[in-house]
Length: 172
Image 1 (tube, helix red, strand yellow):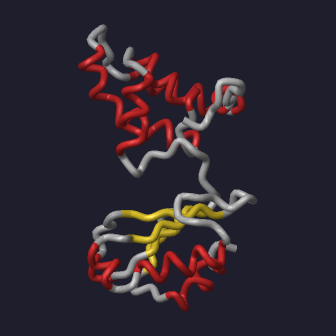
Image 2 (cartoon, rainbow, N blue to C red; image 1 turned 180 degrees about the vertical axis):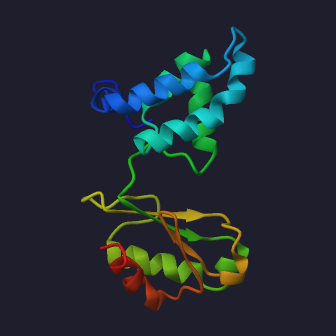
């Protein structure tokens, strides 16, 4: 987790409306005293929380864990296992290059290299101005369009390294 022993993330306090929405959502779940049963609501709760806060810092993870009656380590285990979840803030434009077999064979590696070169960040990082995050996805299910790049919810197909500047310009 990114918070050290001497600092406290304040995401929950800084976004009271998002916290209230998450509280309301979690309170609406049919939770019981059985933490094993409540754990069945973990992934959907994390999706909701990430939609509201943009990522899952420790304060949000702790809120979800407490509401579901499970250990924080169980929440973090799910977050760290599934690549969809993030415990670090992402940029305004989340760029994900598909690195599944079809995309990889058709040059996804070169596309990642071009984004890295132009943005000055590596895969898994965010630019200092919080505009761009660069990541990889295992497969987006659009193999006929390989290689594929997703920027937020927008899909670009048959991408070449020469198209990367144009993709970045679309983010203006």
